[in-house]
Length: 212
Image 1: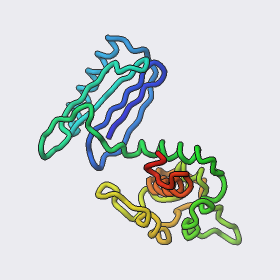
Image 2: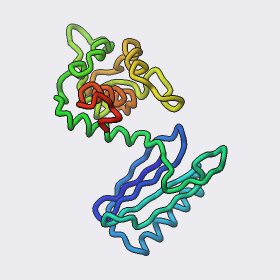
Image 3: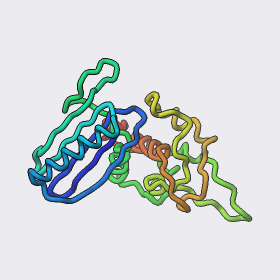
Image 4: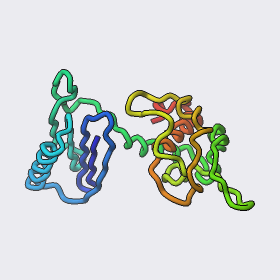
């Protein structure tokens, strides 16, 4: 998937249908003019021809209204049915934004140990420390900003099937954190997936999807 957003006077988003694609985001600020839209459309065409994704859907919104809508390619590789402006795409890592917003809306203390809100995290193994030094426990903030020490992915393949709660929690004891929380940055799908469980446990709806 690919997405782009323009702030202030315009916003644009694009999605390419590919099951294992990562989501990319970029932000620009510029006035929207017919000439500008024409240049953008030309760049979209060039990108589509170069990258050859199954499909691409773009909408540019200016002053609350669509200034440009462009859909290219197919929504199903097997049947070759064309994509439309109503085709649904996996939004992949854009979900992380909604998860973080939900955590903030819940008013949880971001700097308490994360196991305060998800007790299963107490079983996570930490790296050994020299002498009597005690490794700090990772927090919700660490998990949100990718400094918890968790690896990129857990013991699962998220491109093949939907992962249920137990599929995320059961492997905790063997995955562990790989370095001291807060000591370095490394992108972690796994940490944010666990945050989704925190949302489900503490939101009034008691369900991640309903909450989002």
